[in-house]
Picture 1 (tube, rainbow, N blue to C red):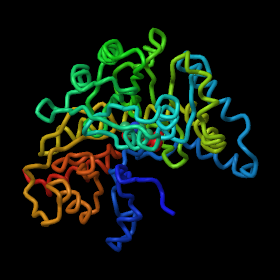
Picture 2: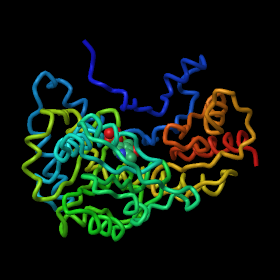
Picture 3: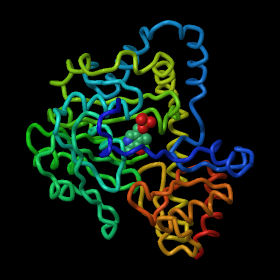
Length: 369
Ligand SMILES: *Cc1c(COP(=O)(O)O)cnc(C)c1O
């Protein structure tokens, strides 16, 4: 008795957490600066913590009204019908719902390379296939409509990540519109705006008023600091509204998550401060890091460490692995982008001012100048 053939599947590689690394180095996790997973360095909104505490004593019950309340609140904010808001267990859960709602066996999705691994993973779980469009390092990983369209071959779903992880590049709303216009009518363009709040640009959600082939993904994991409760959503075309009931996993967006989400949405001060800190940190990193960096609309900066003067283990894939290891030994955890297909780049999350200044100093020691 065996599982189905999973040889085409890949395992998700998360950024390494501080407890894991601290255990390995034999030090206190508090002595580490973890800038590897694009988490909010300020933590969750205090109001969200309070909401989770308040709901704790009723977790023996199945979720009740919070799911509907949160859906309605989001619909109002986005000016959409509540049925167009598909709440899920994280943005990843929302990607699964879109896969379930779109893919017949053998259908393809088109994903960015380098890019977020879960798009392809989800497609394969749902008996689909994934093809890639290449973002060119020589063009600073520019995220232009023609880059996507030149690789497009009738796929059922096209993913655009804007701001893009791990490069930070962005696509304009006009660019997204062009992709939607130039692809088949039955192709859904999914714009993943997991980092949308950190950007200065408008959301592609405005396209939901004019088109029926664009969906937008959002998450509570990044600016809202709620990665641990797993909460995200898709905004889907009006015509799709009824499909949710047929594809969602019952109660996957938990009562605790939805209550935390409602509280976090209302805490404007926490959101503003989070965005402010991230914008400061990404500009600071771009100015102060001695290796080449890329413009970023997110809460992270991609750094080219290809010329870093580090000794590389024979089994290290490239400079990124060596730099990440060297930084880790000095207490700074960054994301080695080898698993994104970038063996010479690391991604550094925006920390607090103190964390970011310290990390940049350490990075410059390691990469040389
Ligand atoms: C973090 C992230 C998500 C969503 O993550 P969840 O924690 O599942 O909400 C989605 N897309 C990208 C590109 C991300 O970086």
